Length: 399
Image (cartoon, rainbow, N blue to C red; front, side, top):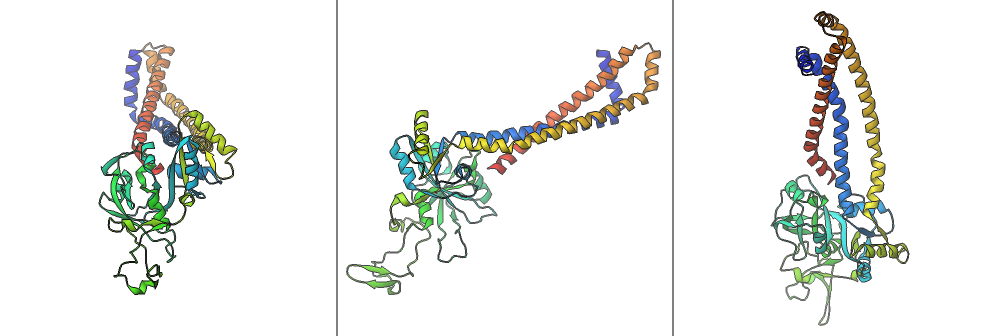
């Protein structure tokens, strides 16, 4: 066999143009399905991991897919909003720790980039194991922290400002953009959190217009033009009194909220059960007693249902790849048969030298084996390198 491989290598080197063509054809045929398989496996792992790490999501009745994906990835169509009453209901049940999530606004464009503004509480950072990589955490209303990826794209750092974008730029009577103070940047987590702006849920309500701050109307320096009526016991302001659009230590005390906090809007509640039994009990309560008020879904089930549909495409890729491999195999067989005919004189010389038919067959088999091994190896190396190169791109595309 050693002599056969030696002669096969010498023959392949002599006919290197033909051998290289066969090897490249085989490698390209195998490279595509291997690369697609590796990337789809990564896609599945990235998507499923975040869903599996989120036990329950509670929100308004409607599409459970929109609810789960918005709470997990921040980028889908916003579902109907629920209220803080749901978070308080979960808290009062004693089955889980509620984490409110408010997703209704985005930032204004900075360096051709915009990002979702996520209003939540400190429990969210503990739940997602997010830590501050630069600066500090939020301490007062108006503070925000950026994901690491967003900080790089927008070229922002602690001490800078960022504006929220109004939902309707043509509605002059609508919500005012809030200038938020960037106090920190999160460490990279390779998740959707890397590309979001995080604020306290109360700051989100200020953007909603539920809470606001304005100049004191009791001061003697107030212009009479902003007052409709002033007496010893009351002061009535006109529409000329505009709310503050930036929260600073000087005007922080003037910010207040109107109404009952239970009625304030949020997008969803991430519920973190204390045990598997508590998770089952909470799901049962939303499936029976509390079914009319809201819905409780398991993100893992929702994502699995989606993937079962999406990954049918993988089957089509494999079928097309198998067909391409079959066609390539037929073409290679044709090339080899034509090659053998062209090498008839060479085969005759080998017979005259005393080589048996089995020896000639061994030499030809060694050539085929070496070309196949080289093509498969090249395909594996190419697929692995493509996966390494495309891994970060796929992650940034997903999140």
